[in-house]
Length: 392
Image (cartoon, rainbow, N blue to C red; front, side, top):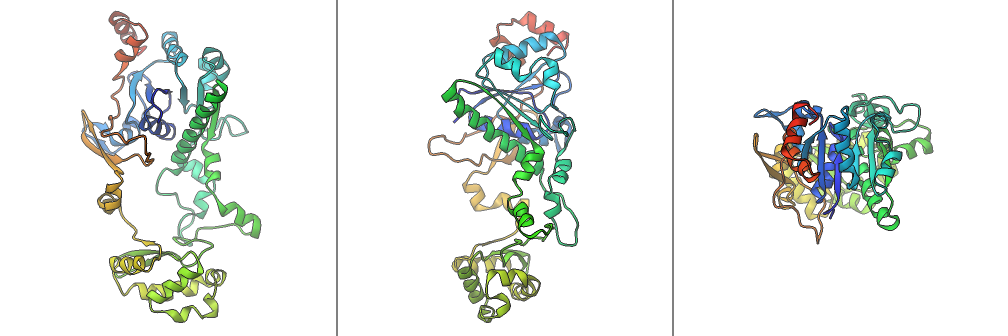
């Protein structure tokens, strides 16, 4: 998909490296730039597998690794050479940092008018919060998503993955791809400014609409849908079953297969609004029935009737699921230090772009220094001198 696209990745931690991993999975050449001797902070995050960070490995596959000290003019010169024939520069610095280093968008437009500069920050490059630092949890709190997550009596709850980081990484990927398409038409690069907070708000879907329509502040409602009933998880004999009766026909079919057709004519449950209004009455009735069979039994019954349903898998179950395996969503990398490690696969399937048969493991710190510098015309003595001076 992106073969021939060169990406210079100045980012660290999770959000932007997640974006550049996606670009790499789609065939782009990604060169990850790190600080000599230190590297991306994520290299120290657990789990540690034979001295290597599993966290780092999980989001930095299919990249080349290079070290550069951007506080040294020689390091900045090398970066300018790399950017001169690159397609995309990705960073996750606070607004203003790259400007002070001499890599502002205005200067990049002069250096390489086709370059797409793509930046992730906590709050964006404009607005009163622009210089605030942010991590995933901070942004989940600011963005309102924690206020609608959890059980009704649990209080605000963090989403179980780093959604603040991952959403921003996905939106940055979309922005970069849109800019690449536009560049084919205009011949010009762009500046993509993605804020983690903005992305959390963009994901609030109908939460804001419900507030504006009713004047009521939405709160957590557990595993159920706030506007559709029954649309939630129920306890079974040995676990949980998710039931999504998203329309009246499915509701009536559901009542039939659980042998409670009397509920169809009950005025408290006669339509979706009534069922949602009387959820506190309906859920115990349904759950009493669901507790009589095991999850697997209910899945067979409900699927036969065409009612959307599913289990609540833990990660162990997920990795053994036949659908997950058939879609190649658990893949392996052979890391030279950590050995064979498993991680999520690439979720975009294409008729023309075949999934890679193997994934390149995350690079060791500075692994491709010599290879990359030689393409810029530097010989071994120059490379060794820069290594000695900690430029690379």
